[in-house]
Image (cartoon, rainbow, N blue to C red; front, side, top):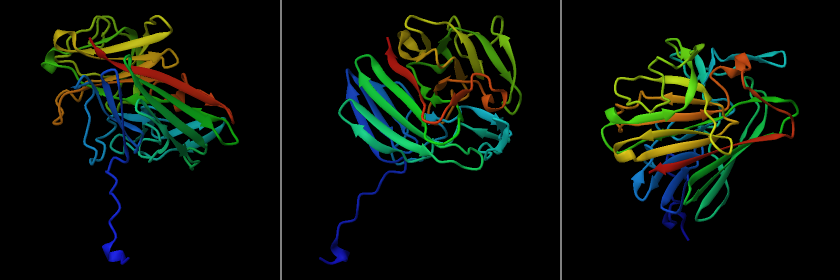
Length: 310
């Protein structure tokens, strides 16, 4: 058979291979680039702001963030007495942002109608001379979309580590009347480059989200901690729209921080609010605050669940 007459191979979408899972009214689509949560809905109602399969993922929308979340200021840090310099992936502010896995093409491990697992390897580089195998399992059920993110140190030395996830939540109705509820007593202020400054009480400030205030007129791009603990050692954050409909994210106390970002309320793709559980605050590689140390051969796992409201 002439090669001229052979069928062309199917072209992979720009966001990577697509895996759709569903159960109990929930449907999720995961794209292999970044193991990104590209779409999530309940009974046909979107819970996150998604994007097209053949689009380059807009920013960090739906991305997994490891081996650090948020920013390393100036890209510089010291670990076990050795200084390192990361690539400045937020050049306009001069920081290294959101880790190393979000643009890698993750490989499939296994999948069925209700779950999919993917993996990738963070290879040692000059800025991060540590090797990690990172895997994720997405599983849907009538209780929502449950995610487990695991990092295993396959190198010969201990590795610094932190992780997060970056969903942009949506809700019905006018976004001016949307409410975010996060029962956190402390918030980290930031300077004009979003470098962290002071950890302060939220009481009496525009950052107080404990009673679920309307978002109209509030700009927030800050990390919260001292979050109330619910049953089973869980934290909960919610975006609530008309009639109490919206979405919530439930995350383990091993993720004691959460970034809230309201700057996408007027995004041309549609309004949304990012709520990002984090294992550590911004700049933990420098400060060491809540930084995880993974010894060779050891692993850490973090879990969260997204579900519909009501």
